[in-house]
Image (tube, rainbow, N blue to C red):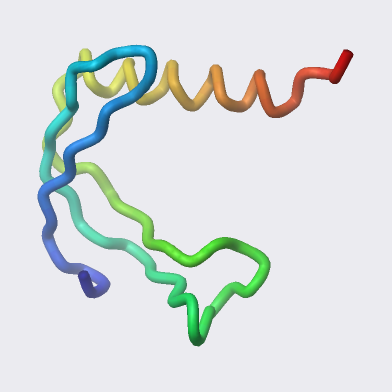
Length: 75
């Protein structure tokens, strides 16, 4: 996809087996061969355009839990 391109996104967030689906717009791209930001992995960002409130909360909870796990002390 290119920047400003509209895409259709399907995500499955653990532990749920039910996929979330919505439209989005590509907001940035970091190419693997010519990265604009070498300190971050290759990929792209998406602005979600058509999330329902339940899916929005599911994504927010997933991100919050991932941040807690990443920042939790080991041992």
